[in-house]
Amino acid sequence: MSELLLRGGTVHALDDDRTTAEAVLFREGRVAAVGDAGTVEAESTDAEVIDLDGRTVLPGFNDAHTHVFSVGIGLLETDLSAADDREEALALLADNAASTPAGEWVLGFSYDESSWPAGERDYLTKAELDSVSEDHPVVAVRVDGHSATLNSRGLDAVDFSGVEHDVREEHGEPTGRVVEDATGRVRAASYPDVPKASEALDAAIDRYHELGVTSIQTVAGLTRVRDHGYVQQEALFAHWRDDDLDLRTTFYVPQWQAESLSDLEFASGFGDDWLRLGGLKTFSDGSIGSETAKTHREFAGGGFGEMVNDREQLREWFAHAARTNQQIATHAIGGEAIDIVIDEYERALSEYDDEFDPRLRVEHAELATDEAIERMADAGIVASMQPNFLQWNGEDGLYENRLGADVRPENNRYRDVLDAGVPLAFGSDKMPPGPLYGMQFAVESPHESQRVGVDEALAAYTRGAAYAEFQEDEKGTLEPGRFGDAVVLDADPYENADAFDEIGVELTIVDGEIAYDAR
Image 1 (cartoon, rainbow, N blue to C red):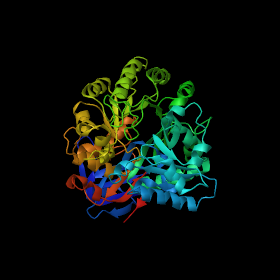
Image 2: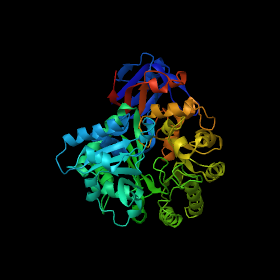
Image 3: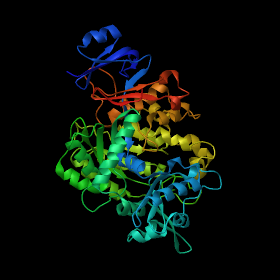
Image 4: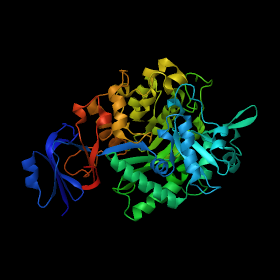
């Protein structure tokens, strides 16, 4: 019998009563007991014992919206998120090119020009990437994934037929920058094969364990990378079959598989404790960073963004999902896009079985209006939001520079969402994937519309995330019978509300066993 006993610290069960205890016992992958040290020890038989020495135990974090393969590929290829300026980003790509055989793709991910020094905040250009290499196709994908820049050889390597409108030009010449559907063509041309995707999955799992994450909900990207099947599903199932998927994963199927998914008659939740079907993932609009979110207000660079998929297309996909009681998770960032998605959700709800609660989800909901938030509450729609997005909400930050200073208290309104009674789930969208990093912004926000308490933030990253995937009876709290998933921190978030970013993960427990140990 496998047992693990943690004692001598502070255990926050995050149950309804917000139980605080001294010890927790895991047995055969489940929570067996929580309480004072003596009582819990008496429940054990032959447990491995870990003295917490005052450390804090929480339920394992659950990232409600991430892209697990993007996390992994970013670790294997060039991670541009660490670049402090244009010069450093280009140097990192050049280092990659120097070790890549001529003719093969040089891939860079997560560059964020909005964080670079004033005067350097334009998107990367074709000419700059030509200076990196003329012997390789080179692409730098922006942090939001909705736009990318290619060098000349990269542009020549991609077929943009039919999506020319998303290839940006100046004076009749491509700038190297592409958005939305054209970015998808780039992904299709450069995406790794299944073996490398599996390698990326391994790297991502290790990274999530380092961050205290024990469950993820990985959502399909905007575009397909091959004409048949889905590379990510293939890699996930290969890991699952080989018992290598030691990260509880719920995956949301891409929009172009809506009819196929419905025809299979698989309901949301199909799977086991390690790999489950979440439902259908769809897109309505683009992003703020790429100036493609469909907004009510004009972008500083002009325009009101775009609908990546129009109302009629969303309605068709939603109808497929409702036919077999599939949950739907729809990317919607701009206020107008959110309104359209709620319209179509309200229409679709009447098509679900009466006894089924679909828990329809709006992913991001960054610029939801008061009316939209109230409508979400009335319809029971889950707000799947990312507290780390507030990293761009400071003075002279991305939100202000794209949409004006008055938008700063009007985006990512977690407080208003909670107060309205909308179920709130926190995730990272892998920008970056650290829960503690993200929660600090929501807890410390200077704007009342965004600011939440420590307990509310932790609940959104555990209980709330579990609710969003119909798993509130299995995970999200440390109660007897729940999954034996936990994170051990070197400080108590309840006592360090102004220093979340300084709290370290010391242990990650998955299925009652140590998956990560930094002691």
